[in-house]
Image (tube, rainbow, N blue to C red):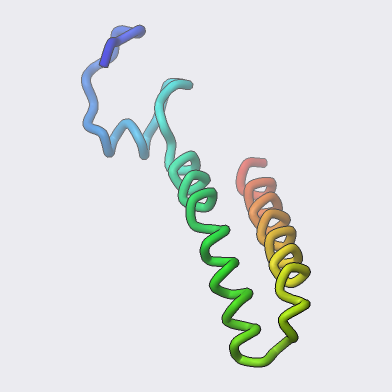
Length: 85
């Protein structure tokens, strides 16, 4: 990896957890990526799980998924807003 600024070489963990430069990944960026990758599959499993357990009919699967998606995005936005003040 090329160096644009003269700093000491840091380990991958240190670059990710204790980022000091704008281009370095941070713990928040890792968590954001994890949410992006895992949220939709988890919501699909939750939605179909609710259907299989008889909480709602087959025709309600899409609205329930949409509601869970909006709720999860709202929750994550609220958490990020509070933590980054």
